[in-house]
Length: 247
Length: 245
Image (tube, rainbow over all chains, first blue to last red; front, side, top):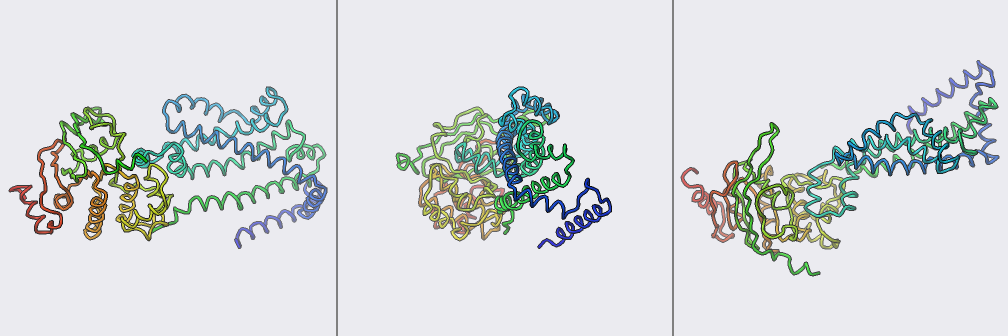
């Protein structure tokens, strides 16, 4: 077991419990109180419901942002014309605050699920594109020639030559993407949806219910940690196994 | 399966390169090849010999269709022929196994029994499930050769395939190449700077000058391959290189 990680978490919980004890205020509940609120929320079914709604939005926005971002980044990294055409837009979209995109999306397209997920994806696409563009610029020309000689189809070239070289860049974009996207999803939910973790947090904020705020935040953080441990990391180990093959 | 009939049946290939000019980094131009013309007869093994930097690799790249910017003509439409190219660097996909790398040379789907046969021919049947990172340079070159054969090429291009190998490994690999050539009767064009190697393997030697590269001499090796032992090769080498060897 990762002993240092466990020590670190135990120390954090101890400091938190001590601080709550000293403050003895409803504004800083201790770990045990948060845990009991969490238990109640799970039993009532409310937490699971809002958690799954938020998770679905995160997954949809993630898939949308990654596929469009990888396509754009690849195109801009490979084609000088595409890069010159796309670069100003990339700079603009990288610097538009997430909040502006979300508000405009709601104003123009209504308070709909598509507007919410689209707004999140638009916030993330430029980051993915910039990362992938760097990878696409570093593609190995010698392997391209090899693929030319053996007349690889577009699909075979993408699958066997291009994507494996982009894998570290895709992994980096995916990892930073997942954490950014779930944070933006909460804002989107707070501003224009009637369910999800973000909607609930807004409700608890108005009630000054700090225990529930912490319980909901921790539960979602835990889900993201599980995704990282059970999906992202095992996939990375599988995709990079050839790197550890040495003579 | 109309293609099957054509395997190995490459007609004579005319190569006539009038000029190949590179733009240098300083804006000037470098003439890599000039008035370089020769024919390749079907089923023969030809070696191009020349000092390093004389444009030998450029020649192979033009014939393979990788470099379309030159003045001249490479006989027929090269795009119609199946070409196998053994690059100087093995150029394997490090994230695919040896077997998958071999299979990717094939223009269509390839049976796993055929992959095994090619691997056995190249002497790497025990390495099929390995990744390229686990291989020595000699082994990687064998994979590169097996991949070229998976293309069922009519024309096999080899760019210094034995350079920077130890002599014993190089010698074993030369034998593999001769076995494959003997079995398939394909047209081979090899580039080398090693005259002994060229004499041992080829039917014909083309000597290329320093830049700009052009054919300065042509030698047909008539000695049967089984008589090309160390002494025989050395004797021919002296004849070819004349007094200065």
